[in-house]
Amino acid sequence: MPSDNALFNCGQDHEINYVASLYLEQQKVRELLKEKCADGVISHWTHKKLYTWLESQGFTKIK
Image (cartoon, rainbow, N blue to C red; front, side):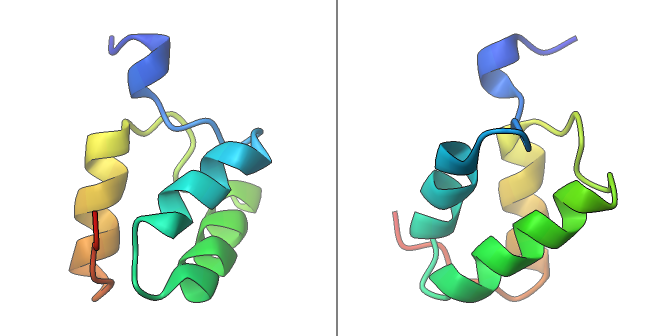
């Protein structure tokens, strides 16, 4: 099991905002993260898995 700091925490707005800030399409990423958190799709994902998934969805990482 990954450590807590490796897991994306849907319950933390600052974490959603941080991940969104890593992408050119910040607002769209933020909206998608909130939607997927609400329906439980990305619960218990690692940051690495989340970044890979976002890039597979066509988002461009800037950092």
